[in-house]
Length: 380
Image (cartoon, rainbow, N blue to C red; front, top):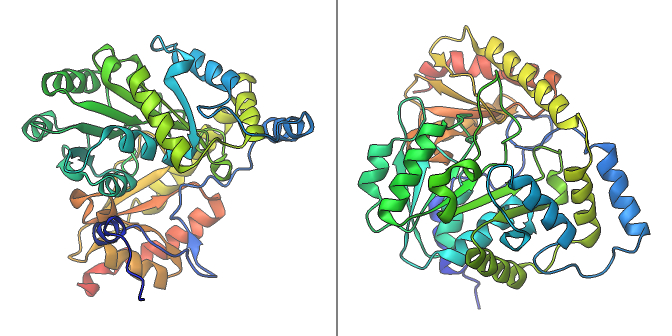
């Protein structure tokens, strides 16, 4: 009989704009949030040592106990966190999926301040929930009035902080106000803080873990991918109130099972070994951000607010051309980028460039993009 995808897959395909195929040969990739750095040597060495030491069997279903203890201690700099609240997951994506599937019921409304990372809506749809896009302010900070208007009867709000794709870092006062709003409407708050170590110009970053108004309703999601250049290792975790953590752990074990034992020991080394590698990578990203700003500064009809965090530039263009069409044209010009509409309705008229690639690729890719953006009026 002919195969027909499940309703969940059909709903995801209908609403998602995430690209399904990688760029072809000869195309410069400014599309992916995959750092071009190698994982630091001390972390790679810890993996080898763990294998030699016999970490080749099933791990604890909630995560390596020593790793969870170290992560709880690290998080307790902003809040009182215990190891029972920590669940080690298959990347940050595993944390997001486990958290949402553990807390959301079919028909629930999930508030997504947007533009924001597109996977949140995909997972909400997979859970049978309704993603509700809530536009942010003109400078892409939280529109608390819009969230207030949308909050009645909602279940949860999802933050990306610092934000992919805009690079915005939310201020302490708006996070505090969000916590008060969440209390009024009995909302859970999921905060994805994958880029928390990648912040520029001395901008103050406050984790949601350190916001008292959020503490009792917060699901904090994190990954080793960005800070430690460990995307391919697939290591993430979440921190949540004990009952939520237990439910998320059960979901994760049912879907994925326990993570690779040896990689969790390497993650323990990443957390507990003093190293300047995260700061060295952050400084290089800041240099790359300045390169992006310089290369796009004089393109007619193009504007961009330099990102405060993460490693993406969200670029606005004035031409009456859809962002999906611009992304397709960019591939024809030899550079892969993301359409702004992938990140929500407010992303139309924007494209996203990742500067997680080498300076040489950034320079060549943006030179190709410059010529396209400067001639967009003729494409309308």
